[in-house]
Length: 373
Image (cartoon, rainbow, N blue to C red; front, top):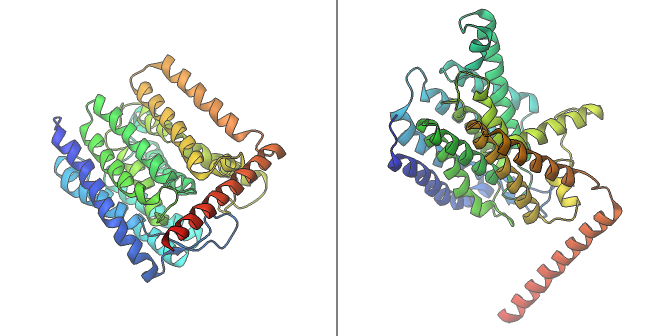
């Protein structure tokens, strides 16, 4: 595919504008269909019911841009139909979960089904056959299938799990997709870059309504669909398709949600809990316990995601010194944020900050009420 700046910008803007337009419609529709997030346990960080149907706007924006700009330029041997069908399937399962709270097993089954559709369409991890010396062997085929499904399901759940604070999942998805798009662009993989720009546009179009204080949540429909798009679009045109670097770049970009997911699984295994049991030990929860409000906690995680995105871009250009330096900074930031959050002084500081925020809100409401009178 030859470079076409119009297509790059048009794909992004189409997704962005549609998501921006349809999010208010989702806010209006959510209470009428029962898609409301009611704070019924201590794991929630909001205190009042909030619509959780924002995935509709993200879905419409990204899928429309895909149909208009990705389908005409798709790569021979790989079918856009697989992504469209798989994306619709994963979004449908997410919406059902938002409305009916389906079981984790059924949700996982839906994710695997969507991943299988993508694999059948020719979009898969291609480095396995090269490593094993041939892509036609039964072992290579089996491993390719297993790793492709595992990759897609893992990224879907990583984005789903990180969706715990206002604007967090949408912002991380936007940062990740922009970094992968740039890596694809500088290496001449314009189909992948265009596809990733549609994801960035959908996430950024939704973000103004989702940033703290959120007017709407994306729900499982939105978070799972975003994770699915990030996972599948990163396989369209890997930066270096013949080696394991094919997954290294997106894995580095998505390092923060992947780390949080792995950390959560290990934590629950050590405690002998089910890995699907929700808790308040995710990275964003720990940052808030260290005394940061929602906005600052989210911005801190944006910064770490941005650093990891630059690491991925530099890695794709074989700039290993820069990669190691930035990676060390990201690791140190994670260490600082994860360590000593149980310190009583820190917890007291966090409580004081929350009290101050409540006082400011109360004073603001009283001032506004006084002006109205």
